[in-house]
Each structure stands twice: as structure tokens, then as C-alpha cells.
Length: 247
Image (cartoon, rainbow, N blue to C red; front, top):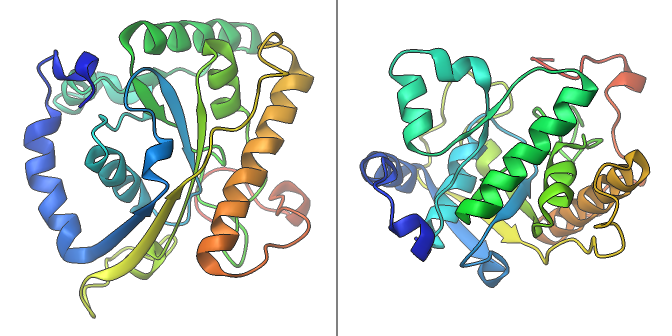
């Protein structure tokens, strides 16, 4: 852990003692670009999303690199007995459904807290599992870019590939044969937002930051897959799909 994270009692250690060995039985995770994840201070990690299992893969990678893997979580989950206590103890970041004005204030409060405590957070910019038929990153939402701009934090793109062979998109079970499937995960250079950092609440700046982020994630995934992504990013709305929930 970073020095700021080591100084606090953490539920991560007992959780890691359970999760890490289990994930080790299911997948061989090969990480590239490890040096791109900051060893100290706040940051936003933004991965692609192809499987309901991939948050554990991303969390495992962040943990291996010495940082505590924290996610954004719905505020309602913090009110669930036991689960809510675990979320608070591990420093997960609550997200409430709010109006646009309240959402901006919430983002600013979250970013301020992350910077103050020197913590990182994992935010899925697609907001849900990709709807793209070939599992390429689809149209991004603004949450990750908005948070990074608000706190002037490094925005780290991440791409991974292979976890869908352990648990396919929307599958209800995990594939255990053959064992230890290969999962490749790459951290990229922080997205350059230097020309936008003075406009953290400007919709145009947030939209541009999101576009840059999705392009960076897609480029990393192209390298991992050794394939070229479609020229036009998948848009669920224009394809008659809901942007939340299962297909």
C-alpha cells in the first residue's frame, strides 16, 4: 500500500486473503504498464467492462501494484447491513442519484476527499457491460472524466482481455475448465487533460475528456487483442438498447 493507505486499519487484508487465491485458481493475470499506476496520491483508474467478473480482475491488478482497489458504489448499498459496513471500512465511494446541480456538487466533494486522503478509485466509464457485439468499448459516460477533472487527478486508462473466457458477459456461472485462463491487463499513460483542467464543470471539456479516455482504452485493447476496433464506437441508444441492466 502507499504510505497514506498503509497508515489506516483496513479490511482489504482479510478480503485479499480470500479473493486473491480464488482468482489465482481461475486466471493467470499478466499485467503490462504497471509503472503507469501512481504509487502515491489520488488517481482515477478507468477500465473497459466485458464481464461481471472483471471488477475482481482489475481490483487484483491494483492490489498487486500496492494500491487499495476502491470502486464507486451505489449509495443504497451502504445501507445494507454488513455489506454497508464493509463498503465503508474499505473506503468505497458512495454515489447517490441526484439532479445535475447536486451531481456536480457530489463529484466535487468526492474528488476533494480522494485528493485529501491520497486515495485512488476505479470507475467504469461505460457505466455497464459493453453492448458491443464483439466486446469493444462502447460509448463512454462522463463520470470518470468528470471526477478526474474536478480533482485534477491522473486519469489512467486500463484495458483487459480474457476474463470473458472465465465468465462470459451476462453468464450465470464461471468456467473452470480448462483451469487458469490467461487474462491480459494493460495500464496506459494518464490521459492528457492539461488543456481542460481549468474547465472542470464545462460540459464541452468533460465530453472531450471522456472521448480522449475512451480512445485511450480502445487503443490499449487493440494492442492486447491485436485487432482493430470498429471506426464508430457502439451506441446502445442508436441500436435500440437500454443503457443499463442486462441486454
